[in-house]
Image (cartoon, one colour):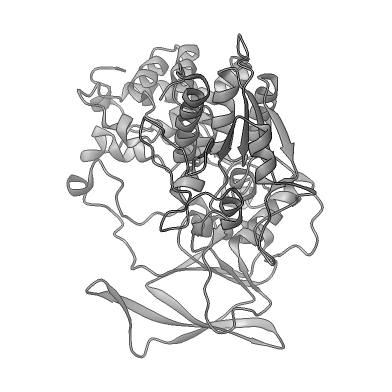
Length: 488
């Protein structure tokens, strides 16, 4: 695989970034992908491991060493074939996956991992440019009809696989455009939505029907979940009209922070803030958009969603951006011999952090403060962990100026009303109860209703959503026809 001594001869090849001052002026992607010579060197570094841990580190089990080798040898067309054999949408994962495969790379034990994600990015972008990615309509139709509820990565993956198996697939999406949290939760500077649109056109040519602006069931009164629906359909309608239903919505229920002052004007969920900006970039009309211009912004939550709020606030022109994290600051460098091949805990600095952001660790918000109903600041206390419990540090209280607070503390579960509409049993975390066992996998407690992605496993990565969508499609295909040729 690759060059036998490549890992000894070559350094890791990194993708580039446009300068900060330049990229803050636009909502366009700013990552500069590898050119062909750099990609070849990257592929040459693959070690031909006896046991390629990267395969298992990747949730979709990408056949990584094979396409590393193909890129090294200049066979890009076969590289995209191998990549597509396990992943319907490598342009999604090549941009926004955190790359657990690289953490599992054997080179990562004591050196720099192969840049697997950058090669995936390079392969699929070249494939689109060369016109190698074309619709793959089925050779024969089964006459079976499947409804997919939710058009995020899990729903799209399930829909494409089922359509290619010959089933008539209809995807229901409550918002105006297809993509779910992939479209409305991730800023365009990280992931331009043309990548979704391009795949949607491919899927339409393969026979998938998309019904946007259609809500299945109902949302609770006062829900903050993004919803553009002009039409509703009932669970009973779908069960009557389709031979199988796949529930593939996202984990859209944001984790709240119920402290005094939560109802002040200026305290918002990240998923109120980010979708609005994505709609503006798409040219949609937005009423009363939440803006960070000239404001002192505090983002509560240290994960990817918080980072996206940081980057968006800086592009708005915020006066300052500060990000709070409840947990202690992790080490800058992980103990690789102790953590490999698993995903390590270490300090991760995103491109948005580099654009301007103060970061505070081991800090908890006690109260939002304001005047005349408007937020003016918040009070915090430092915390430490003793015996697995969080305790406040005496004398560490502090008041911060804030005009806008964004709550980015993750998501608790999918919207319960959708599951309740179908009468699906839920697990202890509020997700659809469905196992992944080969026999009857992804089936819920309700006949012919399946669940995949965030709807089944809770908040997770795009790559996990794609995996579950693909595997659920196989389970549905087996249910409808008695057997399946779709990959596991």
